[in-house]
Image (cartoon, rainbow, N blue to C red; front, side):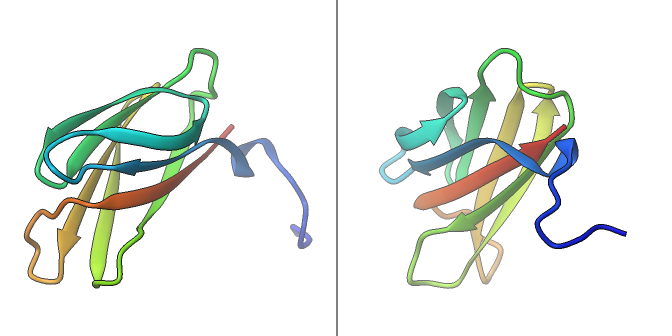
Length: 104
């Protein structure tokens, strides 16, 4: 079994970011191992990771908002992750998101 605190290559954080898509722009507030980001559409952004990150990525994100929101992450390529944010009615919304990406 796996004991609490055990670290394996597929459970290590390889990148993280806090970014904002408010106002139809992309602002990367803080990050590690993220080379760039882009505003794609309302509630949607794409993050590009630096070269050399692991080829198995599992992104986990949460909106930094006082309103109930849902975030969906998709792996687009070995070095790209798309993040989409929705309100309770499934409408795309803008805002600040915090994401961690684990991989191995």
